[in-house]
Image (cartoon, rainbow, N blue to C red; front, side):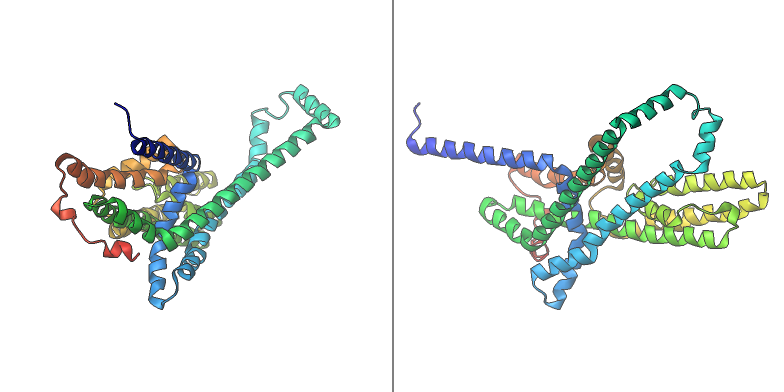
Length: 363
């Protein structure tokens, strides 16, 4: 059967639309890290954006203030923590302990031929070329990170300013029966609670961890001080993103290291402050934030067990950004099963999900 001119034209335009969306999907996949962190940061700064609305400020001004007051400082805090980790690692590598270990293992003078070869490389200039190439590679990586950070900030800004209007425009034109509106109304607040709750929990846990570790160093004997207590407190906050076990990955090794120092000092009385630190870390740094604060700021419809599995499986499947992508996918999937699937099967919406979108539109 021959197709008329109008049908052929519609098919051609349809193929063009498919091609456009395929390019958009490819770009989103290429910048998946930027997309995930932009969504994460958007839900983190949106409560501040809404709070500034009480002052009667324009949306663009509120978006800029939200990013400069919270979003960018949070990103810089992560970058600062990473820089501290790098500096601490360099300090450890340059320490006399590592050199002594190499001597004990006879790794420094094991291969004199290798030393001669390095000397020849230096004489020929090849080693300098390799160092220069490494320097250019580092500059390229830093430049790429800056571009990604800029994309994240720009994306979050326009999501705050124009996101609600874009969503409403799409719903008015392509959601005649209201199923997508009900899906958006259920997903949006759940993502806000889940993602923003994690951010709040990170900051609270980090502050508590820093206070506890710095306070321990101020009161404990010099023989058992915690190295880089501010950094480790910040890492405890980041570790809280992984429920139950995340914070333990920080303070349990600290307790083990301090125990080794106490044994080396041959002073059993040093185990008293170590035991106190263990108890305080377990209760104040770990238990209280993880079970009380998280319960107040976590999502309502997302099962805690499933959320824990998403935190564990996300980095395994997708890399580091999977820690943020997996909860997003989990929330989208839960509401797809409870709202979209019944609509596909029966053509009707669950009555419990037929709610208004006032809060969603006014975000």
